[in-house]
Every structure is written in C-alpha cells, then in structure tokens.
Length: 131
Image 1 (cartoon, rainbow, N blue to C red):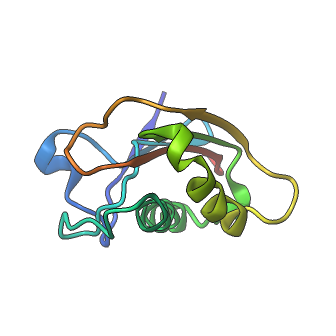
Image 2: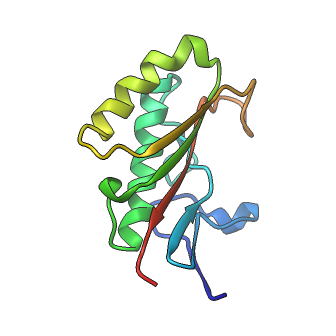
Image 3: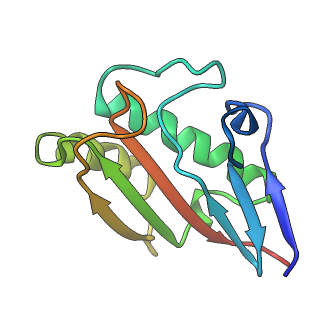
C-alpha cells in the first residue's frame, strides 16, 4: 500500500516530536489529533471555544493539502476535557463549522486530560481523497 505523508506549512513541526500530521492511504486522509496550537506551539486560548476553532483551522490546513474542505469530512473523533462542562462550547463551534447536511459522523469522548497541560480539545478527522 502506498502512503503519502502530510506535514504542511502553517502547522507545528510534527516530525520534531515524532509523528506526521496526516497520511493519505487507500483513498483516505487520516489525521493525527489536531489541537488548539498554532504553528508556534502557542495555544489559541485557554477555553474550549478558542481551542476548538484553532483545531478546526488546523484541520482545514491539512484538508487543503489534498484539495479538500471541511465539507468533505466523513468522520470526526473529538476529545474534550471535562466534557460535561465544555460540551455546549464545543457544539457552538461544531455547529458553525458543520452547518449543512450531510453532517460528518462524530464520536465525542471526555478524557481526563490530553497529552500536554492546557490542551482541552483534540480532533481526529478522516476524509476521502483521490488515490
């Protein structure tokens, strides 16, 4: 199986911490979890709304690398710290991002914490692409 690695400009240097932002394989784009960091490892904010917006902006950067948009997303797995307290804020952004049917599939999880202190949201996304 041929695989193509994606590490576009505008995102943190994923290779510096041992992973790829995205892999295209068998007609699908698979993304590593995207968080609320900008390309300088700075958090977009300390709240779920700001971090969710930045994470989706990072997703868009990856999608653009394969000539796709958020409208092409088929599956999102979202990890939201303190889910019960932050659910409404997450869905406020979700509803802005995905306002037209067909809406993507969503798995929403509430981990106790994410990989780094301060991170509140992490998004894993899949989208079909041309082979």
